[in-house]
Length: 127
Image 1 (tube, rainbow, N blue to C red):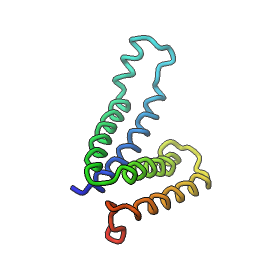
Image 2: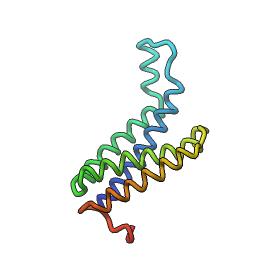
Image 3: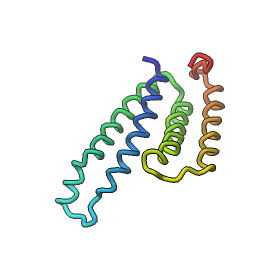
Image 4: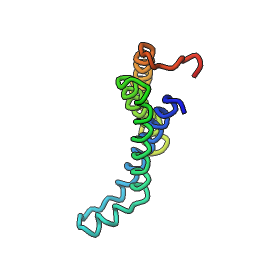
């Protein structure tokens, strides 16, 4: 598989893990005891988020075999940020602000600049 596929998978699992953790934290116990923490540890959203993190790590490591670190890190972190910013209003009913959209556009522009100067960057006309 292409290293760029692995990076896209890393972005998707990063975004998914963050939403799962956010929804899991709604059920975080108000009174912290060993018992309440053990029950919380088996929260399905928390467990699915942990699985997403494992997939994120595995896919990111696979991508690092062929893609420069500066490019892969910027790609995963920045596009994850964009994904969370754009999907939060839909999934979590959080407000969507113009500055969020403007920031996301700037992040995407930055990723295009970083990947265009990379030896391992894909041909964007073919993507």
